[in-house]
Length: 193
Image (tube, one colour):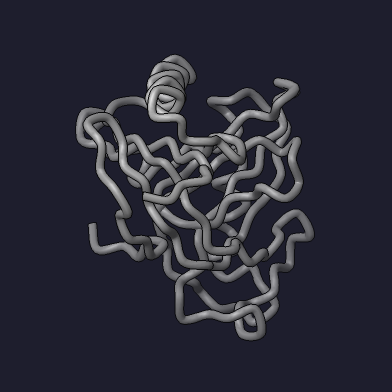
């Protein structure tokens, strides 16, 4: 798929995961209170409406990847709007998530179309270091938890400090065959090679 994604460089590769350095980017995000597996579906419609022209400029915005989902409990850790679609549960398990699309790189905070829907928030995500584990398959909580635990275990083995909440990143549309999907779990870390 020729879809724009956030820019990053691989800092180091390990057997089970890699460390990436992400550049800063803009996201359009929405806060959703719903079940883990339903939150992205609810949010996707709101965000897709925004990029389809429901903004002050009535301008269509290109779809990007991934779609990210992260816990809404820590306000400073929202995830940018890109592909994949990412998801993260709150620390309290309350069912509140931020779901976001990465805004195409041609936009700046001054030029990105302002949302009409007040639930959509445009935010600058600062550059950061993330640990990433890739996997294919469906978007179930069970598969997410399995890979999140694996990544956290590997980070612990390597004494890599986790500095934020996991992000569930989904790069493909829902109609994409599950066995061909690119899914990732991204976790902010403190890392220097």
